[in-house]
Image 1 (cartoon, each protein chain N blue to C red):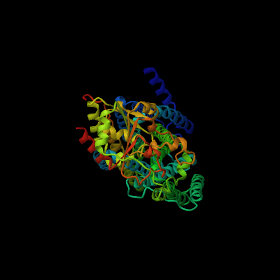
Image 2: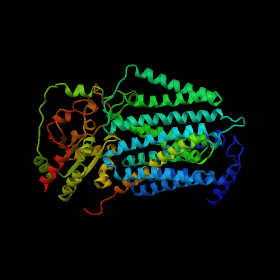
Image 3: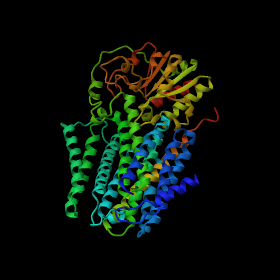
Image 4: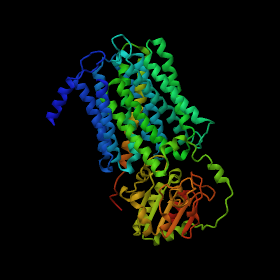
Length: 492
Length: 94
């Protein structure tokens, strides 16, 4: 290890830092940024299991501290007080938000945080444009190199898209804006045209020199990028938000990476690549779990006819309705119960009541497991966090592919606030919009309890669910939290 | 650093990211998003440079604004991740 470090140090000594300005590089600075980058890798690595995750998070914090301190000690800081105040203000706001936010509001918080990264990238890009000397970007003739300008333009564009896209995602997730898709006519033409314009502007920006010539280009580039971010997200419906949030996560990473290229900073590049891949993989997992292509999600419009389908008077099919007492009685008799939570559980804040119910059932010798679909909720892993908040043991929480075979042995499948993820039409009905999506085989369980506010509403995909009408299904029509509380009372 | 060295680091880091992220348990995908959010605020490095260096008052103020935004994210992101991770536990008592 020591030998590795010394070899690395020699290698770093040999590399010029700012090739453009000819300044000698300080290898220790580069090394410090590298260490920060490695710590960020370890931060993500820790998340492979809950038991190592907190140590991982500490690595992340340490990495950030190293990066910030290294930056401050290696620059002639003219405004240390102002910087300290800026960090204190931002830190305090962030800390208070983190303390107070409800776990159910996590998707919108993450969207809001993404928007800040995006905006920060835009600001840094602009600062580098206005004061290239500070970033070592000046070429011999006093301008900015073409490559640097491409990186700068890309960083600003991706940052701006991340910002405005995340603001819209935040507004939709927090209910400040309707979750239904807003479809502009000819939106694909508008979007592709705007994207093309951004690429052309970046190229022009890189090729022109002189502040008077480049300024209008970079202004236009920034404005168009803000606009495209907005346009890209408004046609996407609420149910597709897990993909959007993951995608914006990815973008915020690419924005950081682009800035890392501009600054030649290893920590930023490594982080950008990590975050970029992370968001991309999460988007992929979400799309696969819905059996939809990434492009079809981004093209938007899914669930646009939600209201129309729900309002339509369908043929009335008979279903069985039960009470909390009925449910409690049968739950008590069961040997094995599998609970399937969905977004409705989050909305009703039913996770604590649900855990109480689980505790009572376990005391009575019933085996209880939780089954989580990858797209349950509004962001990847949303249900897991809510169950963890209610102190449900994570050993009892299973992913789709790990538990799906167990429904055949289950006495009760207990569906709370989920719908599309248990819809057998995904397996059988080729015309269904959710056809091909992997779903839970709840029809194999001996009994199905389905907590739902009313029979009127259908899932986000706007399709009827045959599970409602099965012989072994009992509909528990009520607010999820109230129903579970009543079951708990009946069990006692 | 020259462009190719930077590109090499970037490409290799993408591969590292790919394998590391696939090994993250799905149960921790929400904390993963929160922590990636926090670490992508390493962009604060750029904001600090802009804020620290003399030369352009406009760049300085943009930098300071960037420092505020990134700090919200860094402190908020790590704190909320910590809060979430603290909730994941195995039950001691029945």
